[in-house]
Image (tube, helix red, strand yellow):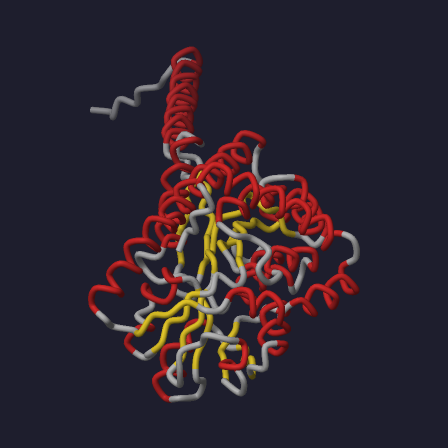
Length: 357
């Protein structure tokens, strides 16, 4: 018996081809649809140098939540705090180049790239954080932000780094002469260095992450920082005297590199800007609340000896700093002083002159 060979007609074969093609197209469409539903969020690294629990750290976390919310999940901020990515200067350089997305940084480090940012830190410029916010959020802040953009950094918001106080292990700081010869750690901030040198101290630039050990080992005698930074990094464990001075203010600029900014859609730019500003409002208020609570705690537990400096004597002793920076920066110094005077008076009128610390 012969084998029976079944053959298909051309019509049947053509039908099978169409069926396979349709199945392939359907499969491709399903895969594409599935992939469209699985698009991952755009991840941006946000670096900062603050310890956990510090208002800057808390605000970075808040900003990540808000950025995700306002972008409908399209933006994911991955937070790297406690100088995991390097010093403030290094993080700014990485942000500027696009190696990381953005950073909640220090005013002094920004000023090393954006000279006009130095004006915020002139001694005894602001009587309160609220007065400083008024100036930073106004035309002076806009002018500084414009120079930053020309240098490859976009300022999303001006967060707060507080009014600064002195600590040391030698003696209470009451008059400028008490700083004479003290080796005081500073950030890479030219105004701070100039101010402390004018007061007779020996300013010693050092990364904040190295400060605790340097104080413990006696490499430096003291340092200057807002109360929240002192306490969140446990500097009260290695410092005996806290001298309240409010001698200068610092912003915390939250900046994104222009290469990263230009890659974002307009919708995501708006989402990130809104998140930065709202997180900044939260950070500012948190810093004031923490400052009040921590000072009360310090007074109760006696972990440090607390005194208040002779403010008038310090104001007089630091006047030459203004002449130096007027020569370096031009008329923005005088315009900032005028804006600060107006903001100080406005805040005093609403609070009766109460200080944040």
